Image 1 (tube, rainbow, N blue to C red):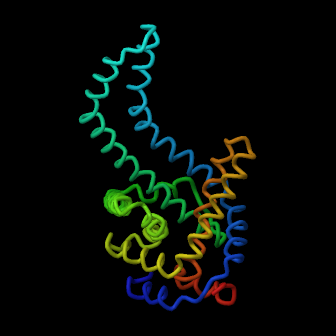
Image 2 (image 1 turned 90 degrees about the vertical axis):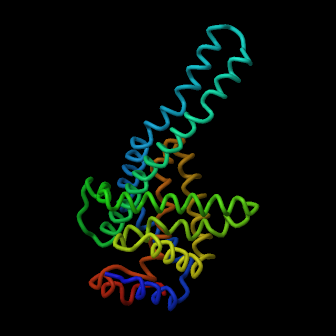
Length: 260
């Protein structure tokens, strides 16, 4: 088990990583995890479906009523929008954050599954819901709020800082998945430490992985995005693996194979 001090020390002493090697390893690992990645996408859609329904039903109802009337009633539309401004937006926002917490928990479970498959261990569907426990969900809820706060602050600062913070933010769920005992502050601190240390290679790999997943997904008639989209999580996992590692047995197994 990594403590916050040993983990930060490993990050501080991390050597350079090879972009090509990490990308190649990501592709090889994706071959083992694509089925689980597809399931993660499906579970996430199922979790988020209620908030999507709540969000779109009023607008669909309004459009149907407008179509039945045969003309655009501008005053009715204005009254409708004014009526939902406070209560509706507040309800959707709260629901979005709560359901978003569950989707992040599924994402964290996928990182654990990815590690198991990477080391040839057995996985089950229940691994996706490993973090569906109140103490974990509370921590993930706070992490989501921290993510939103940092993102909003970066947006207020003319959007340019978003390019910078997107890298540390991409490590939040990953660091939590393998260090759930850490406090929210320690997870944020570790993520920014790792993100700062490996900012350029992380940004480059995320960009390339996103482009590859979208291109291949569209070539598979669009629906393929459900399969290819999780590819973007693999480079950050491998960067974490080579810099921090996991338990002692796995660290020993990695000697001689790391790209550090």
